[in-house]
Every structure is written in C-alpha cells, then in structure tokens.
Length: 279
Image 1 (cartoon, one colour):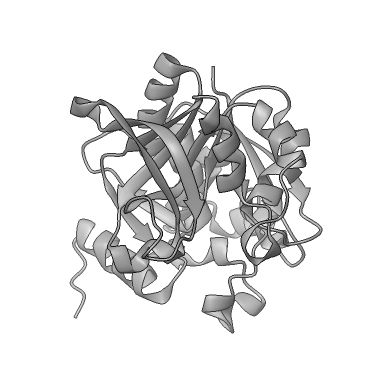
Image 2 (cartoon, rainbow, N blue to C red):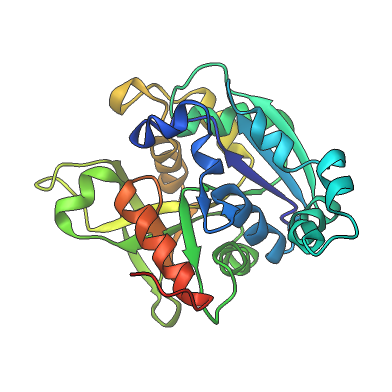
C-alpha cells in the first residue's frame, strides 16, 4: 500500500522574484488555491492521507495554510463568507501533515532524501507542486501511477513528450515499450538535462513519482551531478540498471507552473473551467 506523499517545497522560486521573496513558490495561487493545495488534493483523491512536506527557510506560510485559523474562522462564522473556508478545512480534517526542513538546497534528490525521516521504509509518492496536472475525466495522475505500481512493484515515473529543443530542461528517459495500450515503458537509461545532440529521446520526466524505499540508500551514495546537485535522475538510473523503473505516459494535461508562461496558461485553463471570461 502507498500511504504517504512527499512534497519537496524548499526551493527559492527565483523565476518568480520579487513575489517569491516573501511568498513560497508553492503558495502562489491558481485562481483562489495555492499550487501546493492542488497537489495535496491530488494525493487525497488517490487515497493518500499522510502528507510529508520538505520545507526551507521562509516557508512558514505552508504550515499555517494547512492549519486551523481560529481568528479568521471566528470572524466568518455565521456570515455569507463562511463557505470560503469549507474546502481547506475538509483537507485539514482528512489528511495529516508532517514537516522537515532542508538545510541546504542541493537538488531534488537531496530534498527527497531529507524527507526520509517522514517516510520510513515504505514505498511513497512524490508530487512537485509546480507541475500542475488536470486529468479531466481520468483519475488523478498519482492514482493512475499507483495502479501501475500495484502491478509492477517498482519505482514509477510519469513522463510526457516534449519538443527536442526543450530536453535540456528535464530528466530524459529511454526505454522499451512493454504495454502499448497504456503507454508503459521499462526504463533502461536516464539523463539529466541532456544537450539536444546527446538526448536519448524526447520523453521527459515530470513531477510525479512513486518511489521504493531503497531510493534513500541509493541517494546517500549518489555523487553530485549537474550543477553540483544530487539528482533524483541519477539515483533512478541505478534502479533502472536493475530493471526496477517503469515510465508511464500519463493521461491528462500538465502545466509547468515553475515558469511564468506555464503559470499563466494554467490560470487561464482553470478560469475557463469555471466559466470565467478572460480577456
């Protein structure tokens, strides 16, 4: 059983400065909800109740958001605005939140390793909140991946095809198609942010993972890679060499809210979903 979801949320969000000087990137709103809340809602929809969040300095607003706000609740109780808090109160009641701080920003692999005390020795999901996914009529992405994990019992990574001129922004995989009807690949190689001339494919890893607990020991022994960071891609390559990584071309639409263009695209998409006319 997958019971826990890890949220790496310690990054600086430099592409959104000066807004992210005081506001964590994960708390930037798409309409009325922070990005991180969309991720938590996805995890809850997949049946996960334990949210493990890796934070950093200046991220206290994340903890405050997923906590009761007694003064605000008191002020809104019995007023026409009381319903605005119903959604977040439901999340607080349904899920448990634990936190650990990442002392040094040494890459996604290091952030995941920092979360080990919150996860323990069990398989777990990972959601990167700035990769916002709308799966329309399908199950949420993590739920789709849990079904695949239940069959293969190894690490699962979500992928999508990207233009060749963008492969240098992602971890890129190559693999053997093992389930054509479900777009499932057995991974044989992973490269972090390759040059266009050296890329093994155009299939990019996005911010959804199911990881087996041996990933922690692998990360402890993974040397810093690109940009001096500990890359989860390098640790996954170790697992892939043992035949223990599956890539899944998920069903749905993904928005890269780590950059301004993707953030605006997501805002417009969700506005249209509720009938707002954006001009």
